[in-house]
Length: 283
Image (cartoon, rainbow, N blue to C red):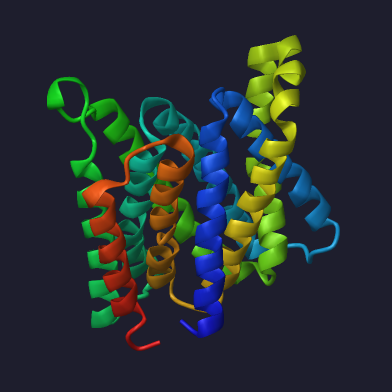
């Protein structure tokens, strides 16, 4: 985890929280994710013209990852429909690093040292625990549909993070890999929206086109930086450091969506700082 890798992942965290906030801010979630997925498809197609073609060994990972990314988008749409941005985003993102740590150890043979393990556990368990504390439905009970959607989103994130960590290393080009990933994953949601909305889709997209396409550019940038970092450092610390976006997401929820920051999110920010410090102890 060199300073350059750390800086790239932190920038990815900020841009990721930004595009998620843009997606949440568009009330019609099918419209917002159609623009972001379709914009990513266009950016990927342009990038593929200039980047090296991924090696043959990377293509099974690309196909599996694209399917997991589509599942992630569907679950994220559901999460944003059911709950507050400042609650759904921390749970979805905070679930992933601990799962990635396990998957990377089992399938990739990357076993983090004691400091990195402690950092992942503190950042993940603390943030998820504090985020869960903030979710309440009617009658003071947990909002289980929102909770389960956010947790399922986190599992999808962990799945594609692990798959891409192996696939991008086999591709020979992180730029080529991300370009073709955007192409493959960017087809499904726009195609579904075109079928579902038919003649109504273009008029519904037009008022949000600039905002949605800007979100698409942020999305591609965020994941491109993460994929590049995964070629230069172990998967688990990158996955955990990337989730510093939770702090940004909580701040965005307060600034743009009028959601309370409160003691739980202050505690989450503090735990994230401790976890990052532990992960980078030997960097």
